[in-house]
Image (cartoon, rainbow over all chains, first blue to last red; front, side, top):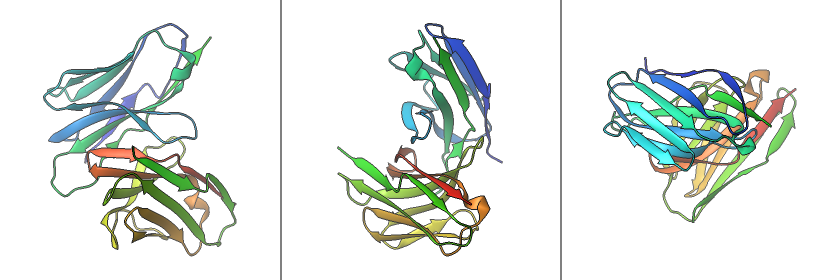
Length: 114
Length: 111
């Protein structure tokens, strides 16, 4: 069964600090892995997307890494800001043709405090 | 540029009442369209997807249904809501499975 597990479930850090969120998946083979940011009461917004051959992808203060051998990804946020408070969701796409189902993690709830 | 709209933004309905949530996409043609539900503390659950007008695939057996009467319109319906239908409903569009852009969502509370 394809699964995506994220840790920690929630995280609280001080503004300006760095943090790293983890994503472990069992989807295999897979096409790509995305990290989404979801503000409370809003739809998810894509931050990064990586194919199985990519090791890292950056988007401003967000840097995602991928280890396809260990089936792990991480999202590193540097110099956190109050606006980074949100849920971060890891999503993995299988390579099955015609299969429209993505596998979503349950997310990490990040809270930045001043 | 493409935009996706959902309405209403919030909805409170009694058990047994009907439901109709609407999603429209602008700025693109023949998109793939998706309905997801997000329950508190749980990941997004794919409910329906559509690759064209009148083409609906259901992922989860339930008392919900979906329709696509126009190319860029996707509707989620129910004849009789259950308490368990409460949640955050998200519509998404994409050019392929790997590319999905989400709408703002509808918060449904069934009382």
